[in-house]
Amino acid sequence: MVNMAVISLKDIVKYLIKVIAITFIIVIIIKYSSYIKNNLNKTEILKSNSMLSCIDTTIPGIASVNHATTETATKTIEPLKLALGIELGMITSISKEENNPSSEVIAKQNDEEEKVKQNVEQAKTGLKTEVQSSNVPNKYTTQYKGVKVKNETDNKLTTEILTPNINIKNKNIIIYHTHACESYTSSEKYSYKATGKFRTTDKNYSVVRVGRELKSQLNSYGYKVTHNETLHDYPSYSGSYENSLKTATKLLEENKNTDIVIDLHRDAIGDSSYAPTVKIGDEYAAQIMFVIGSNGGSYKHENWQQNLKFAVKIQEKANELYPGLFKPIILRESCYNQHLAKGAVIIEVGATGNTLEQTLASMKYFAKVMNEALK
Image (cartoon, rainbow, N blue to C red; front, top):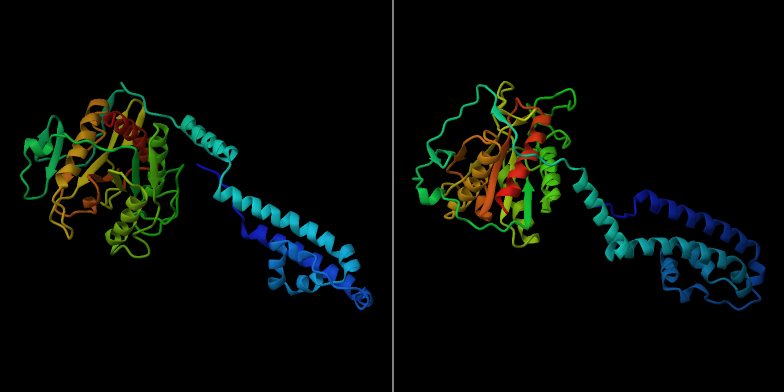
């Protein structure tokens, strides 16, 4: 995380109270010194300061003081000028720091990012993996070098289509959530208040939290990750993909030369007994699944094979490092906004029966796979 200085509403109110208090005292002094005003020439002491002259139009009490007589102004306005100068100077310096961070600020930000990298526990390789027995179906129709694909379309999957001969720009990675409110089975560590069946708007317990973990893990390998946490499925679930399309399009405009766009989900099946799990070493992790769209949806998507090739590339490496971490890839007719980039995919992390602990563990191993596959 990057810590940045911000001016809170509380601070602004504090400054205004100080200014008002000083102004009130000055007005009283001016009232008792009014007889001096009739005998001395007026001066405009504060107008030389552009910041303070601006206050004339916004705080009438100060404006009247600014036009006091020379002697009175000298005695009473200088403290005000000093006080305001200090307060406004603080605000100005903070503003400048926000817009033009100094080398010290940048260095501090870099240190914070480095701390995050150092605190992230990266996955180890060479561990024994074992898929846990469950009622999770493992059907597939096609296979390429151990990577299984369940083809639910009329497209014929040839060896050429499945061969992962694709170059991916991996400098930038985008993560967002079309169904950000999807959540998991509560556990002792992660117990939450549901706002629907296996759904919550609390991002600390939904699939958004899983996205945060993936971002941290990928950051630890040096990738630049943009994670959008918008609730595209709340308050209305209908229109989620139209909502997330706008977000993803904007994210790509802001992050040029980005190929990898991950729409992170949870399996939609609302059955707490449905918990696809793999044991890796001594840790239990939720299984992961790619869902790839094709050219049968609302948007023209003739290059859907690129999305599929990218998924095969990642899963091929996963089968090498952690066999069973991934379920078979599903290929469907709908586009799922994957026409936006050649590395655009849906990744479903676990199901309703999995716990948040298991899904967070999955991201550790998935990030390791990604890093190895994209080298």
